[in-house]
Image (cartoon, rainbow, N blue to C red; front, side, top):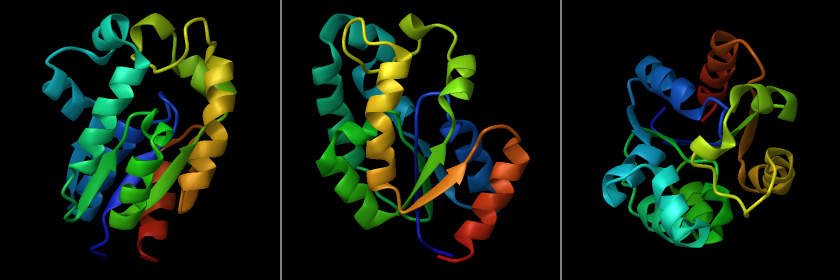
Length: 166
């Protein structure tokens, strides 16, 4: 399997954690979109959001995603990657896009402090509202959907089986 993989999903869906492990299993490169962005802006995403706002952040995120050079790569995007149709069309062209689907109940248990998570959302927008807004976008852009509501090893097994079909 030579096709690169992009993982999308809500903050707390396990994209980075699972992406790192999947990259080791497949002997692929691993890239964390949020870490690339933080290196570029030279600060945490949350600090940037507090100072510049979500619109400025999504512009930078789009530029970073469009600059990814895929070569046997697993990319864990930030949860807001789906807010850019241009970036998502690029990612779908360059890789298989897999949505790590996690229920709202589990996301809410994993994200304990919204004000520190670096989550792009409107002022006063709740986690539930953000989840509801993005769920359709994740499904729209996904080539595949894998449930990740608990056991990481089980999710990895599903992903390995899935990637064998590429």
